[in-house]
Length: 185
Image (cartoon, rainbow, N blue to C red; front, side):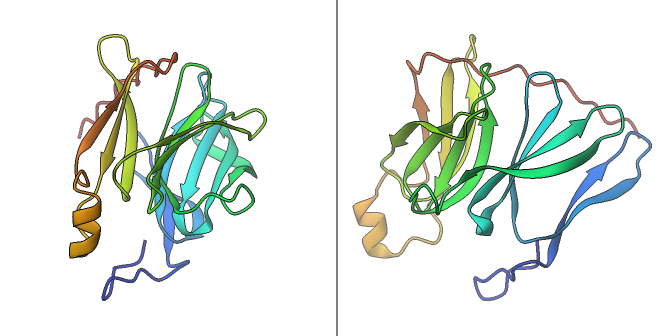
């Protein structure tokens, strides 16, 4: 993304890059504004991506051997679904459905990647949700991070839990174990 200037980030001044095993860097998408949520389906054939200001979650065909992406398409559009706020961090569950933190929206969305339909909308007592991740011994707890910075005094008073990490249990789904990545230089 572009450098923030007086609280504003210029649109379409950034890129999404891939860092390869041979330590080369390749530009994958350009222009983008604010790269955020990244996730892959269980068989590593689909890459999900958020460029926050677009208010869209995109999917690409993904080739794990080369790292290349192709066939960009919309999975979920915030505007079309009348969702306030901006998509931020994202994760995927064992059913290949997405969980999306909504910045300035106070909700976490659960989206069916096959149909693009909203499965769940979970409201939280913080406005600026930043990311989501599954954890716990059985990967069945959803952790949600939130921001405190950028809130004015009234917003801080109205949302005193802003800046907290929330845990959500009993969702009936599990996250997926991340592949261990080790960079050796």
